[in-house]
Length: 276
Image (tube, rainbow, N blue to C red; front, side, top):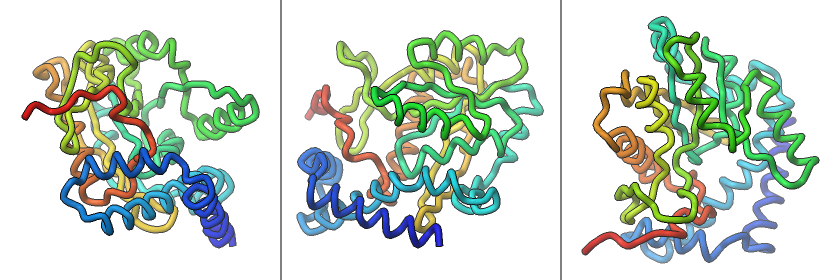
């Protein structure tokens, strides 16, 4: 019953976003066209519709996740190999978990129910107080601890110190850098892409393990998450190696199933072209 209601609500959201509001439609089309230059106009139109179906699901999924039973929640968000984090925890190793805006990142609120670590992540308050309170409650009710973004780097740096009990810090590392000179770039989806370096900087400063969270959409409102170890001890990493591995892993996921990344985000706003 709940799933049928969620499907109906998602369809209404799709009609509003795709056909009535045409939410950021030119940006979505531009991002897809530049990222997949080999696709035909017909393929791009289908991919655009698939993306709007996905974000319509994405807007409904947190509410569904909040009200279903615990057993149903584990079906919606299936963690394939939590034993990797169990092993790292037994080795007293702090972890920087780098996720992305691919699939459903809000389901990660369930992580404290899956791993042995205390789980921390950044939080940016939203202007609408009602929505802000709702999101904060949703993101913390299963045990995750949120740090205001302005204080995040300093607090995360402390939490990841090897002298403390091991902690796990989650970062969504695929957002564009802040305005201003961009120091770090990678080649990503056929474009020279400015990247945030904070996850790698935190990990190397604390010699943390770096784990990439791979997401796959396995069914309607359902996702499977696989932990991939990128670096056991980041203190030994070559500069930019971790960041490059992360974006290579994310690119493979996007190419495999393109509709499930956040194409309505202006990811390349401050972009410079790749050299010819």
